[in-house]
Length: 221
Image 1 (cartoon, rainbow, N blue to C red):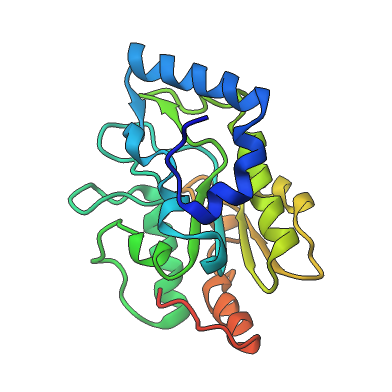
Image 2 (tube, helix red, strand yellow; image 1 turned 90 degrees about the vertical axis):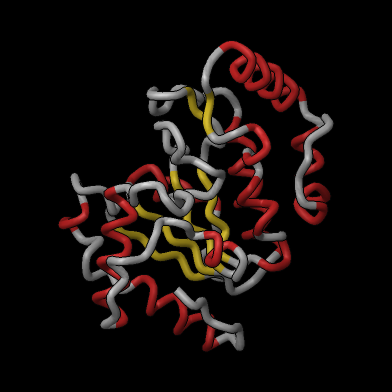
């Protein structure tokens, strides 16, 4: 399949690109873009991989779907571009960061590209979605593809941090070797669940402490 993706990830994921399921997935996604409004823009489907090469990954933050409203999704989980209203879950992420570091994150825009460029893989389990229809491209093959990416990181890398927020992300914990990596779990930062344990989880400080303990430069959140 002719997929435009960063070269190190292409090498890791080539067996997926060569598989029957990915061919079917590609056909489905191509038709969806031709017949309806789909997010993110087609050129940004693999933005998480393109921004954060395989060997540069330090941290994985796993989302579920891209944002499904106009102008929001740009290929990085939880992130929106400057000028777009910061979504509620990201507002709560910033609140937790403010509490952990005693800094004011409330005036920041929602663009997390600077995290991705430092080695934070901002990966959604499903990489496309139909406008206004959350979950509309689930069960089409994307989950198999992103599971393969997570498994490759778990198997081939060491001392990564996986942040699994919410029950959906936590299910991915079974793919990860907990002996080689730090896996931190918490409720999802959405307004519906944030007070069940996301606030106060300390994940951002714990992530950097773990990285520093293993001689890895911490993330400038």
